[in-house]
Length: 394
Ligand code: AMP
Image (cartoon, rainbow, N blue to C red; front, side, top):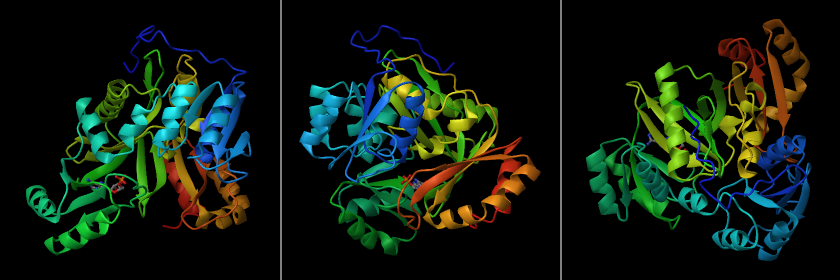
């Protein structure tokens, strides 16, 4: 159902075979895990990142330079047979130059769309998928009248630059309107007001599309955030089968409508009435898809490599229930100190916690340092292990 075959639709499709070199703009953990998956398939990797010995640089060749350094980007293009990225704020000039001088199957349009909330919402709607009601805001007066229309609370967001809850303000009373407008206006970007969705659950679905037009989606993940940072991904999500298939259908529709090549992560709100609204997109592997590394027949990273290389997409079936828990800076010490105890608890509960660390040098508070995929007979047992270890006290 999630597969649409349009082979041969694009005559410029290139198949990049193992032995070739994949260039990645950005050298963080997503690049690192992409390189791990792709190396196993026989590809070589070169990454561009300003910080020496970056997470991806530890497992691939690295060009150490700023992202907007055109000479360095040109060098990346020279050394790679195909170029991808692992973060969405790629400089538009660099993207255009790489498109001209190299092979970038993902193109630059999806980046352009997802770099800006308003453009992104319009594109999602054009694909026939519902987002939370929103309005572009250009003045405090416009904000006042939009708040009157949507009712309180509602959420004011900057159109660019926001992540992990930054660049947004939940307006709870009329007295906050001026301050919210003034504060977010300092970001010097357009603003957008959204109706507050009283969601029951936050879900995400990762869809992959290759240049031939084949599409596959991964099982939906049920995501739990703490202080706006992803804490848990629970799979299978505790939702009705009809919601599961609708969420996957919407993600496939977005991948098709936006002409995605590679991955697109679709974040959704699910209301108590069973309605789904798309919150936002990410045109790359996503933290909520890390569970696929051991729990699916194909991981999101392998799928991304397959898609950009023009290979047939892999089977996304779930092999086992799993809970992914993020390891932030403050969790590293307890995790390392209590590994033996945590292993004993794992044996008793018959769960397999698979620890992934990203090789970052400094364990700053809230910084994503790694994650654990807890494989278990059911998600409740995986959640029991997480609470028994006393590593994630929230
Ligand atoms: P975002 O940066 O858009 O992913 O938003 C961060 C978090 O804020 C989301 O994961 C939600 O928990 C919450 N949020 C964002 N937009 C809305 C909305 N329109 N209604 C309710 N909650 C929201």
